[in-house]
Image (tube, helix red, strand yellow):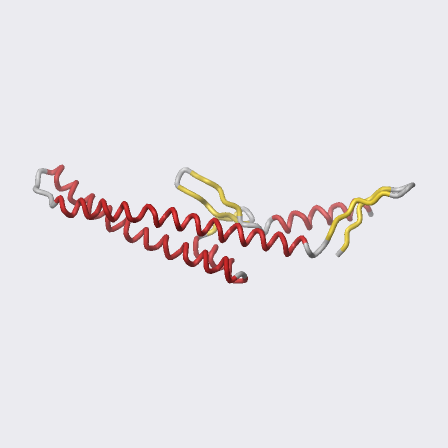
Length: 154
């Protein structure tokens, strides 16, 4: 009977900790995971629907990320096309190369801001999830003159 309650306790703790969103740094950036499953940015934003503040931060992060991708792609195209043209011997338009470099430079702060806002949203989501799960039950160590044990209150 005691083994059953211990297994139930460990299963409950595992299930509560499995709902959190974890952030892993990789060589290509940050990866968001939940239950050992990779999450796309849109899935992370959808998970924030229950918390208006976290949803606002996540949507702002998605907006910044999309804007940085558009600016970065356009800047890379402008700079890369004309730098490639200069390597082939044709006369490139250096003003477009400079414009592409400026666009790339504008994309970097947007990516940094998007990562910061998404990190803040995930931290808020995890904090609220921990607080909600912690208020459901408590685990106490009890000891008496002739006994010791664990008490789980729902």
